[in-house]
Image (cartoon, rainbow, N blue to C red):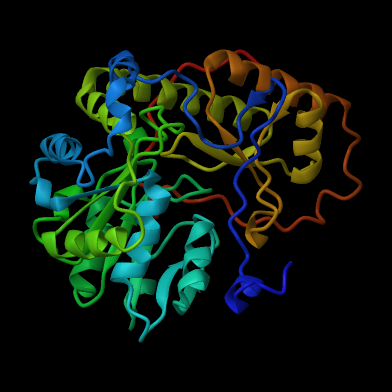
Length: 387
């Protein structure tokens, strides 16, 4: 703390990212891809690291925006790119939320949303998810300075069908609706197809998850030209060159390598569903995820202790202790089949050695989610890792 801080800095509670360990561990805590990026993307990054790095990159990322537009059946005027989806969201909060009314988002969702609001003095209201962690869009039909929904939802992995988002957009045409689709490729329905009908819809995506490019820092937004123009005004008032030459080159190659993406997503989703089944057989309660992670808890073991026991065995998972409703839950990133096997074996060892709880009726857990409420579909059958 310094006496030279702006008064607003004293009140900020910054977002706390997941741990990046300094020693080798089975890293299942930050929802990164377990597989390398597209070989085409890696080759493009290497080729772009040439003498032209002495020159500034294209500030409008024209070629990248054209590639993204072609991928989604839109025009380049519908695309905004930034330094990861975090930066894109930050610009969207500044440019497109109105402070005459509170912004609305869930009580259990991506932790950066309230941080942006505090930074920008944007009033906000958290809308509780149902007891089963599903989101009711009717709760968002009220006066609002803007609505932000992660779909699939960060932390829970639950997803809304596009029809539910369409209902919300029909009811809230006078405010911006931001749909954060960081995890959509892993099995949820996208809202991109609604953009041409709703000029208040902004869909935000990232190459950090399904494309395996978290280290490249590329995110983008899709929406009506008026929304994109607002984002560009904020961006150019902050940093006109957010994406390097290497980032733009690698992102273009990744966007265009659709077969690689489809195969990688298929592998991760299959491992996810198999792991969920194995954990359920081992006594864990597991939410039906459409993301590249699972949210789970065990009725007889505190989440904090489980996380510590796993860490002692060289396995990192995420205990979201700063989210009150998730005190009893662990979020586990889907790793390779081998990494998930290591996790399962460690959990079996921990549970085998754990003392029996004194009173199993003392806990009053929230009910497990009903997939009929808000999830896109039942998970497909998948091969189960050996216990």
